[in-house]
Length: 135
Image 1 (cartoon, rainbow, N blue to C red):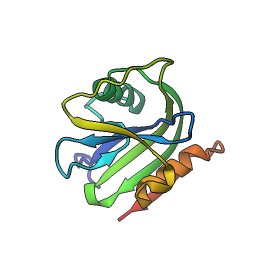
Image 2: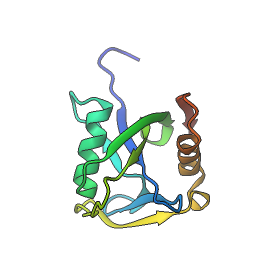
Image 3: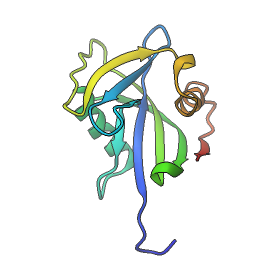
Image 4: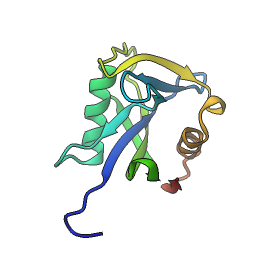
């Protein structure tokens, strides 16, 4: 990789309710996929700043960041995704941005294989930051 080459970086939140379900958002763009809250880093941002900004934009709330649980390479997007365990503030009222059309609590077993691995690594966090490559 040359000095001026670029690839994508993103930060994402694993947020659970009391039933152990994971918060997913349905995109209003691209493939209209369901995914974890979060998104791409802007120039000059840290992974923590990007996570807080993206989640404020997407959910209308400021999250509590608990820990970084994994960094995952996604070949399809030439992207590294940082995954964090996060918590909603007590009494949070989710207000979606125009980027998403719906939100839902989903059992980890119902997630796609890629999402499931990232979430399981996060929820089973043992102090070791996981990594994996998804082709």
